[in-house]
Image (cartoon, rainbow, N blue to C red; front, side, top):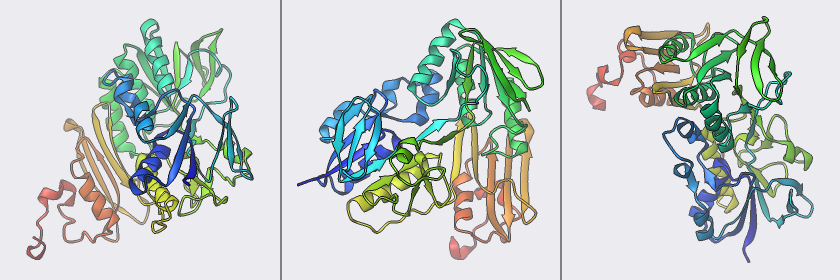
Length: 407
């Protein structure tokens, strides 16, 4: 008799775990998946190209409904699990659908952080998290003109770029002076801002939003300095937090995220968790690479091949924001223990910085030219001594002479 596996969350991390399970042991489990959205599993990273008009929704679906049927997976779309009964090993959805489990995977992802300010409930105030948000943006752009994006991180800039392509006037509001501070230092951020301004994007740096004004629909954004700007659409892209309400209500141990060990198991042995909802060794996650690694380890243990353990490692970020190439990893800001090698060519919009400690690369920022990113990253992760190539390393791999014994 097959064991029953239930997955809560039809997103990228959870379904990648199912994919890995099917590769390792396709007949071990009867699999049931609950997804709150009305679609099959889609690639959330590709929402920006959908907003920008480069892709259609059907092009970003990872697993269509036929795939679930082919793999004998029961899929419930548009159903939200409201209760996990850990004693009787059963989940219950908002419409009363129940499913028993021997093993349960929680992959509830994350929730967008919304500013708790007056006017946040007005029509036209949204996040940038799912297909529904993208549809609202595209429809609004047909009849309205002014968009304000709150948050100068990756997601905010991608939303701003897409809305510009849809024909709106877009201003990005950012609370400090460094765009994409998770990925860039000040020099690279300034270069990017100048390039985006050339494309027509506006920036309100060091601005703190105080209130959203309007009757039914948002009309203006007011800042703490008293200034106001017109807004028909406000996108809040100021970050995400792990979606742990269901786990907490069910008595599963949580801190900022659902607490998991190196096998992605929670403190309840029959229940696992993967993705943006988890907290592993004090860390939470927002990039895809670690989520896919978690999926692999979790699947490994679910099929009783418990040889893998998840260790969160240094991750690199390779991005293409509005046609601009970026790559960063590690401690790219540096500190009093480090030195920095820097190459700048503002006319060509190129900036490179390697942060060095004890003749080892500990941080990387590449802007405009990222071809050597993976090579630098391998030097970083392997903690290689770069003293023999230090003189030319900032110019890239092709400028390094390899000693004959390594050739």
